[in-house]
Length: 120
Length: 111
Image (cartoon, rainbow over all chains, first blue to last red):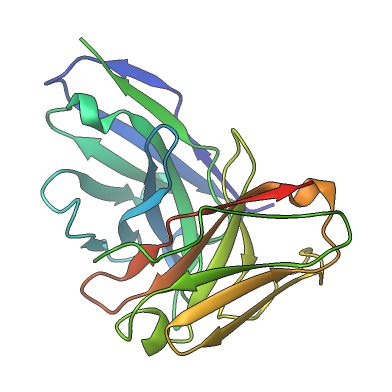
């Protein structure tokens, strides 16, 4: 079964750093893109960026460029989303999702989500 | 890149059909046949329902169908069922610089 399992909920203070993870299983991790999506409380989905673990090719939404870093460790089939200095406005649910390589542009499946709460 | 525009809500009685629109520009929806639709129940992760404008993944009921005309894509749910009550989001490829943009989301209510 193809699965993406994300790390658990986090509670952090403003200014702290954070790295959340997304582990793929049941498929060839290096042959599919992994995207990250933000959902702020009560709001819609926002596309943040995407990485191809095979060669670490990474693209960011202009809205998130410079605000987060997306990376992957193909040796352990895991993608990451990290912040160097969190803000209260980073409070949200974050989802990872798999995108097939090639001329494909959809995301399936999705991870269960990681809730990040930033509060002083 | 602005979010694609969807109606905030649509509703219908069981058995009826509802259609959700997703309006973008020639740089996203109108420029590519890469529109996908996702269903999200409260507290759950999104689920792929339609890809490449009108294709259904295995396991998705054929009550769900997609189409596109110009800069507007649409998702139609025929024979509405109680379990279809959820939020729905469209997503379009938008080119190599900003590859993807989501819609604003639509809440479907089954009356």
